[in-house]
Image 1 (cartoon, rainbow, N blue to C red):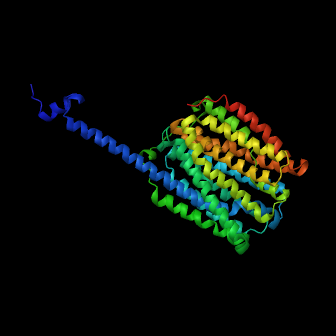
Image 2 (image 1 turned 90 degrees about the horizontal axis):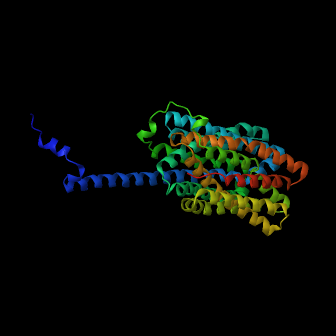
Image 3 (image 1 turned 45 degrees about the vertical axis):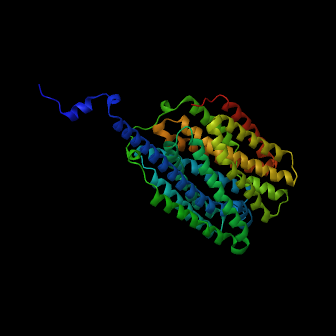
Length: 416
């Protein structure tokens, strides 16, 4: 009988009988791997947050004056404004669904993210060169197609997070989105009278180019993320709670018309054109300050309570507008609108990522955005038609009803 070597005998011993030094080395190695993973996660989240900050800085140099540019400089009516905003939101949904599905199939996320930022930068140059509202259509398509970055990025965030910090991580990125918007709005307010619409639009392209560079050079995809999945997602892969949440969120989206209507409402109410971007700034500051706390709160008390709170904030907005408020109440409307967005956006993404099958997260995040985003075109267009025919309050009556229905359905969704 062959005599076993000392090394072989050592390997055959139970783990509990190993020398204490071996056990210590094992746990040290495991602890080091865990620490390295946490460090990599924090670094990735911070890079995403910085890129989001810069991109939204560029976007929100434009957004506060977008409806004014269309209606005063390019002479578009409210129906045209609603069409362009709805078209943009619908394209966001399609681009996210496509990029989410493809990135799940090939397991390469990064290319979609930096390419999306470049699309956004090029579109702003196009806006600056347009002389009629119809010229904006192809650049609006390019701009909103830049959202191909969102589902792959959100899938990475969901994958590298766990149940104790997922809401916080989504909240941080969304908070940096809004913080970038704050700085973009301030630039808009101070430089609009100096540079004018067109130079300001061209200037807004620069931050997004920097965002693209950050992602391209600093984000490294893990090897496990590059494994191919050949099986596509089907309806049987989806949980009943995911499907219900998708349906109720679509109903909510049918009443979630563009922010442009609130800005035009404020202008029609009597606010000076130069003060309208300040109202947008108020909304953005509130959303920036509350996104992270609401995301963190959802980690502690659950996603549904925070989402229901976001619905309540929007109901307050609708009731306030319908009641024909004074100027002080209009300012409060933008505060509650910011609270609504701060609670809704990060927690909605968090819940979708948790209800979705892990291996199809990007597909589900993109598909969710596609379905709810496709509701955005009829939402803003119908709101514009109701505004023209029945008056400024009509879109808010419709949104109030749809939000209430959606909130009632949310009660039946079970969190995992």
